[in-house]
Picture 1 (cartoon, protein in one colour):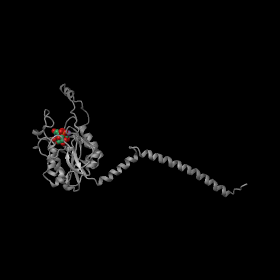
Picture 2: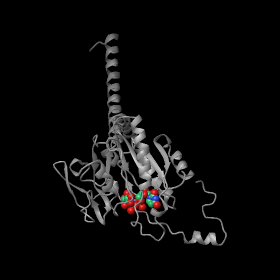
Picture 3: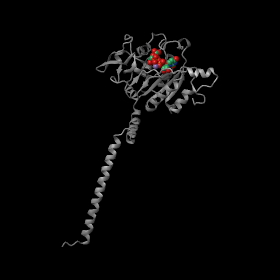
Picture 4: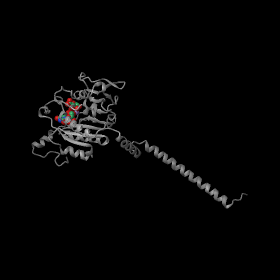
Length: 318
Ligand code: UGA
Ligand code: MN
């Protein structure tokens, strides 16, 4: 018969308690492991958001500012277009918005929109009215006169002054208010080198699925456009961005009314670069689409007016 001294009993109790503790710890560890694995595979998990934010604020410092120039004019779809764009801006911290209204003065609508989107620190509101002889009338086909000339030139004046006081690498992009932009486009655009122009594919333009630069060994060797391929740069405004130092190096570079239809892009590009110097970017992806919003029908709104009734949006916040 084995005799237990009080000491041996105490020791074996301690061993039994440790075993139970050990099993409990293993169970907790396994549960935690399963929890962590399932959480990190989900896109909307907290971990993902936190990591993502950390990544953004780290890379913000070494990313160039992108000055996005948006000409815009009053029409029923304007607020819808600018709302879509403002949400892109909220997701891309290195974007700075240069909005130029085609009007005699800036409007409450645009001011309020920018403030509500909390973008006032990353935005400037300008205005420049298109001269009457160049303004499209209701009956003119949309392509019959150049659009955005006055506004983009006003923005370039503002940017030239701004970069004089704030040296460093930055980029200028002509961002029309009606296109559709992926946030990834701005990641790619941030790779544009000093003194260079970046070019990339644009979807739904030129009566094709995509118009794109043809790239071989990281060089642009041509373009696939079918409409006026003889243009010096047969690409859409949405398909390129310019390192801002090229505007300092070419102080008179600007848009011009006196060019053929569809030559606005070639006009600005020929003043700052050559085909050989173009920097191809995201060559096999479509990250921007030249969408065009259908003008909304207003027949019944007009009927209200004729009957002396107030407009349907009376009392709505602008
Ligand atoms: C195409 C290009 O994508 C434009 O960048 C280019 O300016 C235009 O052709 C051209 O060749 O002039 P498209 O879709 O036909 O564009 O032009 P819109 O989107 O109607 O206008 C371009 C920009 O100018 C828009 O941001 C628009 O809001 C603005 N705009 C248009 C004005 O500020 N005032 C106007 O009277 C018309
Ligand atoms: Mn457009």
